[in-house]
Length: 294
Image (cartoon, rainbow, N blue to C red):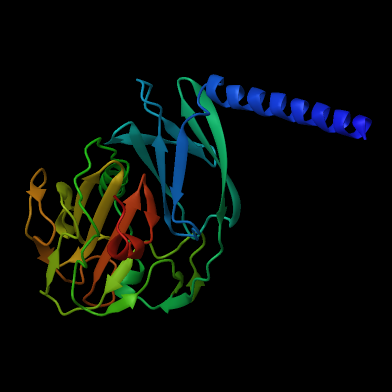
């Protein structure tokens, strides 16, 4: 009986020592005392991952988050808390994703299970005069530069608004055949609203007008275009407009009219295409409208 108790006491002492060492390890090893929260809880392809990092109450460098070999910045949201936004798309593979949160004092590894999602396929038939349309270098260079914008100030507030009242004609993520030919590495990078020509298009959230491109200036694919920089790597683009009501550099509020629906560029009929980009990748705008990402 004494031997049994002695063994139990020894096991308890050893467990206590290990627990104490572990506790000291968590405090002493740099970077591991921070907490990280990732939303949504069950992300799927096309979602934007929000990574909130809460650091100890001392001055540390701004954290960065790495996923799939790409590093994303974080921005302060107050009280020693930082938030990074990570895009996912229909072209990504589902399954476990390794996230690495780095500060000047250490690195923390986390895993996220990115769930698969089914995307439908659509056939588009362009008229002969638009089938052979080729985009210009000016168009692609300006749109490409716009999507890369990462300004530090967060300009949006709360859930995004619907930019047009027309019915949704094409949802996010659809794969396409154009005139019978499958478009490789393509997915519908936004939401289409089929409304009449001249119907109003409003800003879904506050921001700065960072792009205005006109069909007459060489925007042959996008047509008349408006791009809004919402800050912190989040941008909205609106294409095929019949009219543009804003100028580059101006600030707009959520709900402010920025143009009207049209069919300029590579379009088969009047509609608005709204694309929402996070660090240059087109994400699903729907969660931003209903859940909001603060």
